[in-house]
Length: 157
Image 1 (cartoon, rainbow, N blue to C red):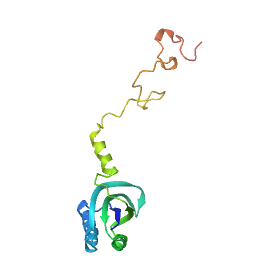
Image 2: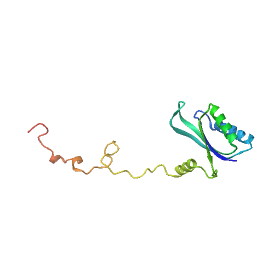
Image 3: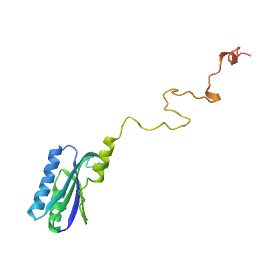
Image 4: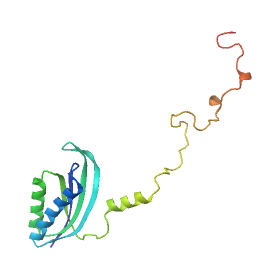
């Protein structure tokens, strides 16, 4: 049987359990057709690039399917009719990799990284705008000593 990878995007007001219920419905369709689900990854609630049906965030789910083309068409039909599924995409693939997808691998790297350190501050003319954090040693920004200031004051000569 051919192999497929399906990614579905569900509304953000659903719980993770409700998204898993949608995945169970897909599993039932595949099982009834004599196929199987080889991979199932919940990617979590993620931001969308643009609004879809007034939603800014959505639940993402990846499924690796081993099923007939007729079963895949039925899955696409059911996901298209499901009111909680915003979008879905199915691709035919040669193999289904058992390793975590790039999304989950990246998430693991982000958690391992220390979030407190953001790197060295870039050298530049302008700071953050919150006052003088570091002294600027250029002449036009150096404070002049009192004895160099004009004793007459401004406007008097």
